Length: 278
Image (cartoon, rainbow, N blue to C red; front, side, top):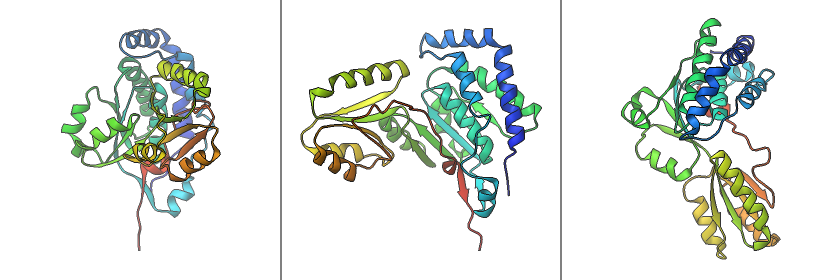
């Protein structure tokens, strides 16, 4: 049964941080290039993100994986907006779960190519057998989908729905970068304006609801996936309770900014299958 190597992964990450320092000029040039059609990434934040994983404790220990006869799916495609935060999280999680990964970013292709190249070099140095690729055209995923065992779609749930009509393998949806917001009063105008600003800067999507018919709101939010992130702004506790009870969502915020401490998380269990052996 496959198990990950914590020491090797740490050495890879330390090498990546060093590689970023040594290639600052190239990386900053890539960021400037991406800004023309994408959105701004920050090299210091990229380093901080990688640095935060140096003492990371996997969700599943080596003993968990052995006890539950788990293994990676094999070849995974990740479709997302191009955020380097998602790139880094996804790559690190496949190192722990015995998978190969093809990243399909919609934007920020230059910086993502640079980061993947640095990580790939460190994997080779440390003899860590994981394959990482970048794909610049989602149509290549559709036409070569037999090469993949599973796909993970991050972001807009309506785009996820479209993707599923053309990709016939299993697809896991991750709602990061796309939230539903219900507000029933102009009293929340200031925080809604704040949400708009954060969404614009970070290329997030927000779907707003203000209908008085709660059943209609619930139906619209629930129609595609149960993995929703929902923010509810109301002073009516009865209404809030009904929404909490009936919404299909794994994260619900009540009168709170959903973007506080907002970060991409890829559940390791979504990348592993259990082998039932009798």
